[in-house]
Image (cartoon, rainbow, N blue to C red; front, side, top):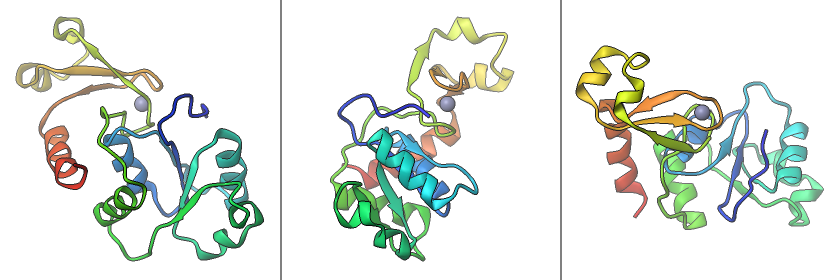
Length: 160
Ligand SMILES: [Zn+2]
């Protein structure tokens, strides 16, 4: 995992907040999430990489590093769906919208000339989309199709 290298806040989501991590990435934030990860590993890695811990796990907040303020952390109330979780985090931390990151890994996206993806993009995507991107971290090819635009519209409602 890469440390957060710029001044943007980066996040570490606990094992219950995978959906939130994906939406934070779409909103332009680096958000780490791993299935089945141990709480103590999350805390150690968040501390080491300067990430803000997002958790719905009450006991997590009794840890000394969080109580001392060494590790910045935000409790995300349970029973919120992922959109409500995102709205909650955005409101609490006053997060502006940033250029979308890869929803799979949080890496930055770089724009590709359309002609360069002709052999790689699915034919339908190639025909119907004009904007293609590659993730700098996981190398995944992405395009602004229906799925992207649906997410984009939701994000516009949540982040001003
Ligand atoms: Zn990626």
